Structure formats: C-alpha cells, structure tokens
Image (tube, rainbow, N blue to C red; front, side, top):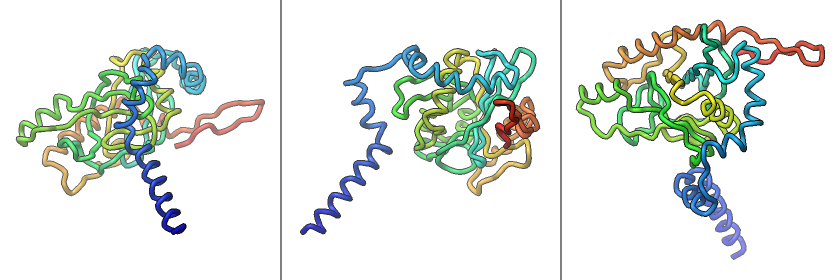
Length: 258
C-alpha cells in the first residue's frame, strides 16, 4: 500500500510539474485575471534597469548608441543561435548573440498550422506582449507576403500563426531564449521601436555554407533561401567571429568568441 501511495504521489508531482512547464498557455491567462495584466511600460520599469545594465556594455563595445536607429535579429536554427545587430546610423554592427534554448521542428519553412515548424524567411516584429505565457514575447509577422504567395501556389490553407520570440525554455514553433535574454531584447525593442526591427530566420548560417535541406522541403525552398542569403549579406560573419576584448581591473579578459 505504501509503495502504491509513493508511486502515485510521484506520478502526480511529475504531472503537475509537466503541466506547469508545458501548460503555461492554459493556466497563465487565468493567473493574469487574478494578478492583473501588465503594460509594456510596466515591464520596462520592472526589468529594464537590470536588462539595460547587462546589454548596454555590449553596445558600448560595438560603438553603437542606445537606443540604436534599427535592430536586426538573426536566428540560425541548426546552430541554435540568435545574433543581435544594431545600426549606428552608418552601418550594421554586431552587438552580441544568445543561445536558442528551444525551437521545435527541423530545417525548412513553416507550411501549415500544427506542423511545429519555426518559420524561415525575412520578417518584422508586429508587437510586444508583456503578458506572454512565456514571460515576455515579441510577435513575428508570419505568415508574410512570401509565405502567403507560396501557400496559394501549393493550394495550402490554414498556415498557422502566433509565432513569437519569447522567454522560458519551451517552444512549439517559436524561438525560446530564456527569461534574462528576452528581458534584454524586450527592453531594447521597446525603447527602439518594434517597427525598426528586422528578423531573419535561416535553417543554418547561410553566410558560411550551403543550406541544410530537409527531405520534405518544398520545391520553392531554393528561392526562399536565396532571399534569406541576400538579406544576410548586410551582416558580415567576420564581425561575429572576431574576439572581443574587455579590460576589467587592469587585466584583459576574452568576453566572447563564437
């Protein structure tokens, strides 16, 4: 009897833990009804000072004023990496990168609702969500014009949507960066303006080699990857691969090398 109770308790705890993580889209909206919704200003006031303090030194090293004139977010699915670039008014400059903690699916564009694919292409941000089920989030404008035109060609409907860059480490078709990273990007985008953000999502870093092709890739994927590769030319890979040195307390320390 005691063994059965123990096993039952373990199963219940495991189920509750899984629901807490993977069922946030269900229970978090209910929580907000009790706790109250937040505005973008509320979020920036709460997380902004610390997020800005972590991110601004990267801007200083890149030689870009805060907030920048424009932002570019490059997402590489195979490398599980997001690179942040900023425009100083003269050229794009690399600021820093973040590991992608979760992104479902495989190489290849998103084709339909429920395929768990992270879309691929050149996008923009539509809005910021301070009440995301995944801490904070930024809405990507999938499907864009290219996605819709290819769907018409293929006679596909129900393309899906609700694609976000968000916090936490769980994803179903979105890009999860964890909470500290999304706090930095949310603050930056809020102070720069979401309309000044370009989002490029690629199957892999097309600047360093050919595209990773999945066996189920549509016939028009070469056209898509040509567009993505052309957009990536504004962001030289050597600027990301060089070593950035920082001086702290009179000693030189390697800050990042990718």
